[in-house]
Image (tube, rainbow, N blue to C red):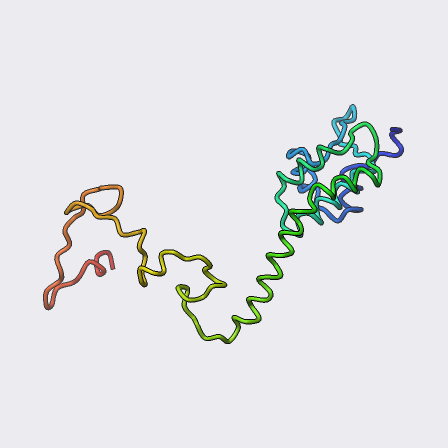
Length: 178
């Protein structure tokens, strides 16, 4: 590609609406590529703009960068990706995107039923806490209750300093250092 058709990092940032630091991050993660000039300046091909647009749209719908990177690695390096390349990439994500759409629809429908229902309880709210098996055991934190030997103050087993309650007219521990 001729040097006149390449873009500087500032030009890519301005045209894509992405900060220079984000471009450097994308490059470090293998999402985009640049070549370096003799003066060590980055130069990007014009198709980088399309890749950045794809990255931004993908992130906006919640697709992780690692998944985006794998998808972009399927695009050709030796030429600008064409319509068929992008269609193939889109097809790779179709089922995942359909699943996300179904989840969002369930959330939307559940919120409609949930708002104003008055349950206000995680053990009864199927939307906020679906398939909660610990709710049957009653309120409270069940997994945090760990039997400890006398004198242990934490799960790490450090010996505790026995605290004696303050008597009438005595200052309690909260007054120390006041």
